[in-house]
Length: 259
Image (cartoon, rainbow, N blue to C red; front, side, top):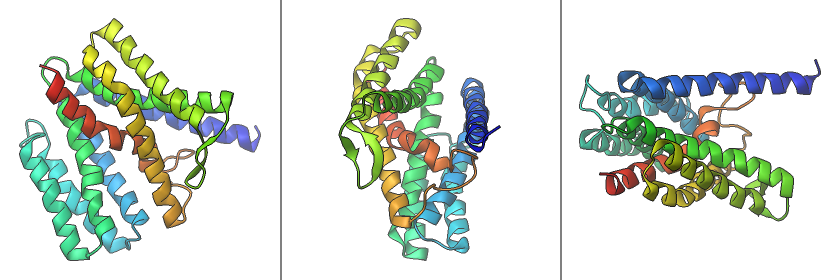
């Protein structure tokens, strides 16, 4: 097998494992889902700390700080996804700001804590938690896939060449269209509230802006990937950057629009 073929096989293998883990955790809900997303959050915080230029001690301190609100989110065992966890996220920010005096490192408490809180909150919604969380997560995957194929097939002007040279306006618009189509399929097949499908284009825009934001951070830090945890995929932030931007807004929309 050629080197390129081997790399593609590795990338696909890791992708299938990640998708399987995500679906298993999503289906399990409760403590199982919380545990998977919380572990992901701790790993994300470690990668964020490295992008922020922190040393090993700063990285560990940031991970310990964010683990407190993550632990508080545990359904059944702790307070769950609510105002206490939100307050602890804010507390983790101020703690890191005071102790390290590094604003970018401290901001990681929000960057990691808020999307994890949002996902656990969505999964804990009575009756429709599974569907709502699947919508919030899978719309990002649909957006990424549609953007990739539209960009490759159509090409054209670059979206943000100074940040991510491979992204095009065609891919950007294709991602919005793909995510929106996916949402309306969920309305038709699974009974997703139509209001959430109509809001999906905005979330697709946020997902791609989140991707660009992380690309900017990597350029500033002078690295290609946020980490090397996932062979062929980089780090956790590389895989979840779009979800970071969309999950908190998706949770707010559900709390506002879904009764």
